[in-house]
Image 1 (cartoon, rainbow, N blue to C red):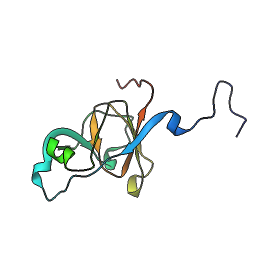
Image 2: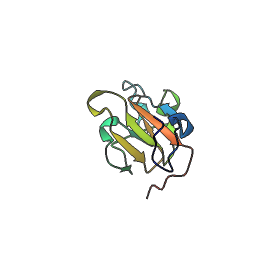
Image 3: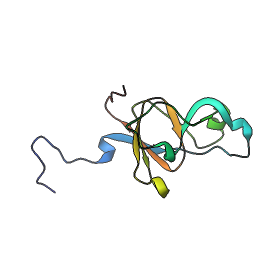
Length: 112
């Protein structure tokens, strides 16, 4: 793959972004849900930008699980299931479930 268009460069995804994935707080603990942290599920991916979430988790839900908050401008990609391959750019700081890979670009992204 050396015949790239003029001005393009061969690189890896790791050179463009830091990568991670989310997590799901235990559904058996109601204290983990209904907070103020947007929690994106892969079924919400698809629009170019996500500016709101269907569900929200609490600080406790965040700290007591593998969930983590990704900053506005991050790019979520559904890794498996019915939504595999769906992509959206975070228009807000938000956490996500474990079925979503998230890239935090190493450059600024306009989310407006």
